[in-house]
Image (cartoon, rainbow, N blue to C red; front, top):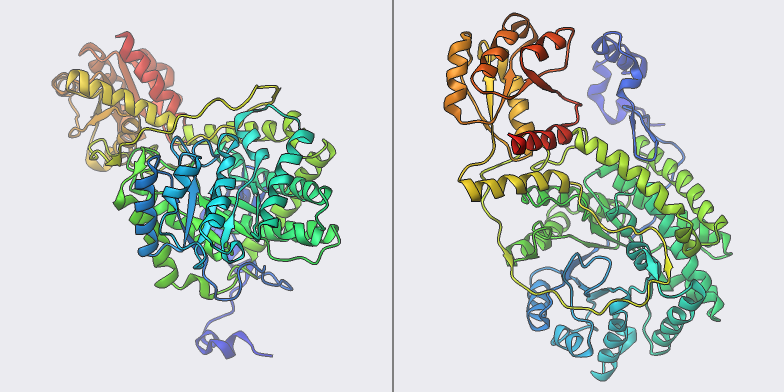
Amino acid sequence: MTSVTDELPLAADFPRATVEDWRKLVDGVLKGAPFEKLVGKTYDGLRIDPLYPRAKGVAPVVGRPPTAPWQIMQRIDHPDAMLANTQALTDLENGATGLALVFAGGNGAYGFGLEPSADAVAKVLKDIHLDAGIGIELQIGPQSRMAAIHVAEYVKSNGIDPAACDIRFGLDPLAAGAAWGHSPYTWDEIVPAVTGGIKGLAALGFKGPFASADGRVLHDAGGSEVQELAFVLACGVAYLRAIEGAGVPLEAAQGMVYARLSADADQFLTMAKFRALRLLWARIETSCGLTPKPLFIAADTAWRMLTQRDPYVNMLRATIATFAAGLAGANAITVLPHTLALGLPDPFARRVARNTQALLLEESNLARVSDPAAGAGGIETLTAQLCEAAWALFQDSEKAGGAFAALQQGVFQSRVAAARKARDANIAKRRDVLTGASEFPNLHERETTVLKATPVALAPYGEQKYKFDALPPIRLAEPFEALRDKSDAALKARGARPKVFLANLGTPADFTARATFAKSLFESGGIEAVDSEGFADPAELANAFKASGAELACLCSSDKVYAEHAEAAAKALQTAGGRHIYLAGRPTDAEAALRAAGVTGFVFAGGDALATLQDAYRRMEQA
């Protein structure tokens, strides 16, 4: 048996590291604090330890064929079909190997999308060789469901062999109902339309898959990994049952369903989620008496993590998400361009989205290793935890009567609401960091270019006959962006943003850390920080505050300096007209005295930054 020292001869010169040795070092750093302080929790309550041993007795999770790259998908969502066709051809000529045709009203349209008419489909697909190995994915909704038929008709009318086309048709009324919160039909009425469409497409010679179990809906709404996985399972099983009920053998139905998941910037959780879905779906296949086959999983980088402010950071988030989904075996990945939250992306943003994947495939060679996470203790443990929790929630939806009934009863929505509430609280407190929005804002960023286009007008979708709680898409940065919008409006109207004067006390060693923190906090809400030198004389501080033109002031220094000078400084600021004075630091035993001297609030790590900023705007509006 080969030992560690055989593989790494230099290791023989050092004592073997043990968990006990590591723990002694950690306890020394913790200085009496409980070890549990280092243990993380996901929004599903899953435990994440700081250290894991190698997982033994595990096998790689089979995804793509060995060394096969994932499909580099590119969104085609311009409302002008001719311009969309130009974009599609450019994308295919420059590295994309597939096209995600996003139709207006689809779950992933986010305000734009293709017109779902036969004429628009023909224009979009002009000169695209559908039988040349190009992956096509349709993202459609109830109002654009006929687009699938139009694509099929286009293929036949142009003499293209349907069996030679790689088209995922994306039929998914369950996800649409979840996002919209209503349906004009019962599930029993929906099933014949779905299965009829699938059987019709299969009869024409298309190989599918046809029905999509789309977890993005729950992820976009702020849901957790477990909730997203369970929803995919519930929808996938519902479609399998429907297809089998229409007379299609399960062995054939097995390849007619595929999944979509969101990939976000939490690398390890994203990897574990994609791996977990493959294991869970294999369990379903086995329960159906089928021999498991690798499920086709399409990935989109997450909508909810996009920011309008400092959108270039979105490139970094998308790169991490793509890296994680690719390593976890995704079959196709669509990178949302970094400016999508601002509007239709221009050619530069589209090129970056393509090249994000091309670089990871061609230069980093990520596809050449199958399931590199296999055996990694942390990811294996997360994968197993996700499987167990998602299966339990899936069983709850089955007990409710299946996916549609579960939506009617709020099985998924209630859990998403709880996860969203917890997530919103952590974002407000900046525990979950949104770089460029809630942390490290840039008030002087340049305006980002997007394309001008008029969205396709769609008729309302049917009568809101069967209603349930909707799961509309959100972006996590929106509350901070709303404050930045207020700041922009003030700049436009008055020529200046709201300002906060950083009333620094003592030497730079005393105030720099807290002044930097306060600047980031206030500017994340669009309140421009006016820095200053350290002051010892309250009169000089008051004069500097008056000269700054700021509406707010924030005392910044060390606890030692606060004890000696904060009360006098607060009184001086109040006398100089400072009606709203903050102190950077947690309240201490001196809080009552500081408030009596004029301090109206405290800002500190872990405090509710969003509530503080919203209150600051209310105070300024009342002034």
